[in-house]
Image 1 (tube, helix red, strand yellow):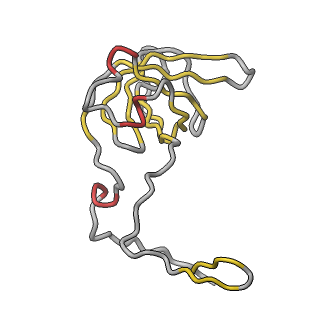
Image 2 (cartoon, one colour):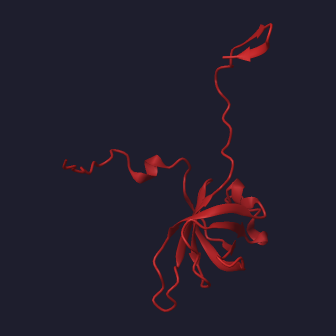
Image 3 (tube, one colour):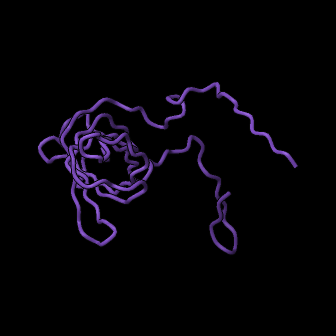
Length: 143
């Protein structure tokens, strides 16, 4: 049986699909992780842009970080208090995952940019309608 794939262009642009607005933000930061041998590694980075759920960074050298590696991301202590820093990034460190690795530097052969997905709890939204409850012999039940 022959299968054919058809590319369909979405009517929504990539920015329309984002759950949080991405804002330009240039701040010094660092990424800390353990390599395959269990050795703790650290890379100095500068943020390019950030949202409530992710951050894009420029790496200033160091050991390459593999795709999907769990890392700790932290913005330098001196700039965490700024009002333009998303709330998730104001913490001492944020557990994150490398979800995109950018182009490599020709001189060093290591990636020059990474995109991190912040592994933070989503904000709980208050529902407009109250949940119906009723009493029964078995106890309180919800709809």
